Length: 148
Image (tube, rainbow, N blue to C red; front, side):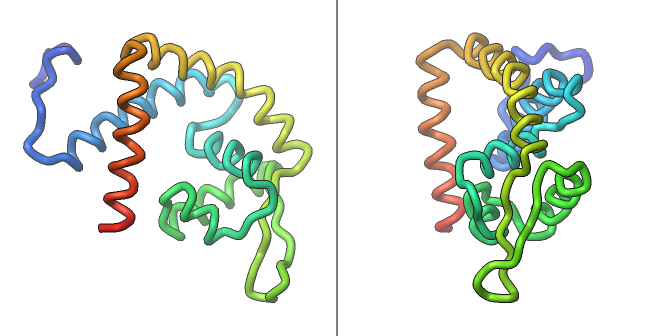
């Protein structure tokens, strides 16, 4: 395997291994683009999701992103410490509502052009037809994993 170009990567016999390998490669690309903003793609994704949902519970956010509670809690801790996300009590005392702060919206706005650059780089690398197929296929894979 050492010395192989990405174009010659073999298909692994495990779908999960192939997906994880692809995720690591794509995450590196997005992380590189977001580095100057002091963000990783996991943090950017949380900010983007909260921008889309407005106030939401941690449970709903976890479902939206297909994240387990431990991973979501760890990532939320980082963005809360940076002042980008805040939590307030919900109707039920056990429930907390998460939302972007003004600083979080500003950070998201600053980082979005860098994210768009990574997004466009991937889109160009795949070509328009593959890009469209990828979005549809990933939605199917996610549904199969959630429902399975």
